[in-house]
Length: 245
Image (cartoon, rainbow, N blue to C red; front, side, top):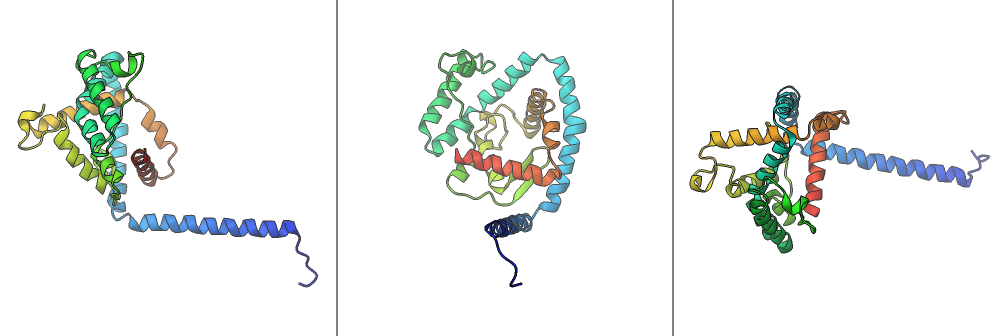
């Protein structure tokens, strides 16, 4: 219409609307790409539902009963001891990433906590030193990511939860370093002597760890409209952040 006059405000609104439309289209395209690349989405949704049911109706009730029986200081001590004995994983992966100061910190923490901390039951390096020695939690999945290996497809594991192809490979490599995972041919160097004992140790550790964080899972899932993509995106973002550190 020749009588229509375009004011600066009108042009600003048009530009904002166009920018919003472009941003929406980019976000929609990204979501669409993520969906099509998630080859195991059907399985992952079923496994997420299974894990959710297991946590709410089995793991959490057992952990609550466990917490009612065992005082928190004992549960915290067990958690510290398990963390301490997993030292080889953190030490080796910090070395593999060239983080030599971090490796030295991990070695210092292990020596101090294993001696003054009564086999790791007390985290002396963190809680009872004038100058604390920081922990550096690294695993082989992070090491692969550090050297540019992509995450691959997302996979939800039974009982273990969200993961991806890279991190599954990382867990397999870390199993050879962990004193708590039985590996065929290395029985003499491991605490568990068979697969059953490894599963038992992991089950107790999981119950103990959950007992120290009761209610956190429920609070997290309250924010989710759809559990699977929420947990998937949260996991992948967390792992990318860990690798970037």
